[in-house]
Image (spheres, rainbow, N blue to C red):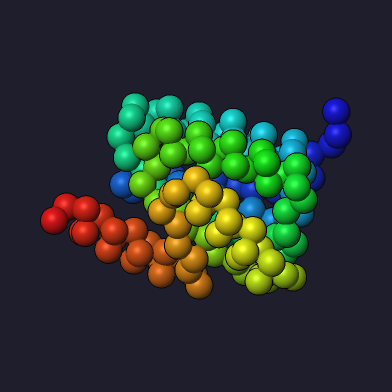
Length: 135
């Protein structure tokens, strides 16, 4: 088994918002670790809706094996009542390629996704989405 590379931390904000702060590049082992940690948090939600924000730093281009694993994880999120996903690319070496890869995954899975410039903007997008779904 390969050694995990890429780092992340998870923070749970009020209203079931998970913020992942991650520094790449990532391999499959790092994505699996991330999935297991997110799943542990989501299981505590007991089916209630939740939101995900990913702050991706540095090398954010994904190799094909990682893209395939992320697709599985994103599908799992969809099946476990995620309401939205927001990505913030910061200090990215290849922002345009990363945006393209991320967009393709979410479009393929027909999931709600946004890009934001910072955490405050991401939280505002979630607040707007929640207001729209209440009406």
